Image (cartoon, rainbow over the protein chains, first blue to last red):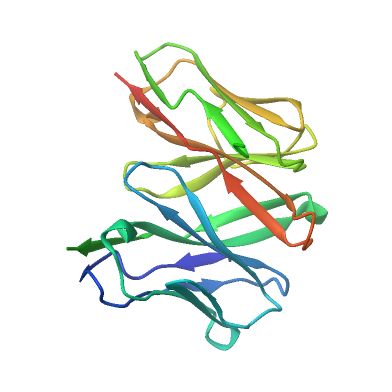
Amino acid sequence: AQKVTQAQTEISVVEKEDVTLDCVYETRDTTYYLFWYKQPPSGELVFLIRRNSFDEQNEISGRYSWNFQKSTSSFNFTITASQVVDSAVYFCALSETNYGGATNKLIFGTGTLLAVQP
Amino acid sequence: DTAVSQTPKYLVTQMGNDKSIKCEQNLGHDTMYWYKQDSKKFLKIMFSYNNKELIINETVPNRFSPKSPDKAHLNLHINSLELGDSAVYFCASSGQNKVTADTEAFFGQGTRLTVV
């Protein structure tokens, strides 16, 4: 079964600390996509990154970096030098392609609430 | 330019009423979705439409009826609202990025429905 696990329910750090949010997934598909979304207190879901299953290169975008390892089925997200504005719920998601590619349903993890204290 | 927009952002209504939430995307995507986020922040798919055709219906009560007049719009109508319907409903669309051909998925800003 397709599944995404975010074992960390809540993380609290002090500003400028680095923090890593864990994501472990299960899938039988050989082609799939992994996503991270940020949900700030205002409630919208903000797209952060998409990674396809054939691209295991790590990615860095400013203070954000992602480590994708197929061998451990993990797609972890690190924020370097965290800031108060990073406080949000972060969701990892797995895209399941069905019906000949007609739909890409997202299966979400339960989210990790990150609180960055000043 | 808002990629996926849904209205209204907030909706407060009494039990038993019927209400609709509208969603539009300007990304040219073929597939649209409704997701429900419950009070514990858990996000789960409700429906998926591809080119106006219903593809996924995840055992949602038939009081919920999605309607897709064209592939850029997917509205959600809810009949006989119940207290348990209170949640945040997100519209989303997915398709191939026109530059990279990678799958992309974007969400609307959410509609917070409160049934009293």
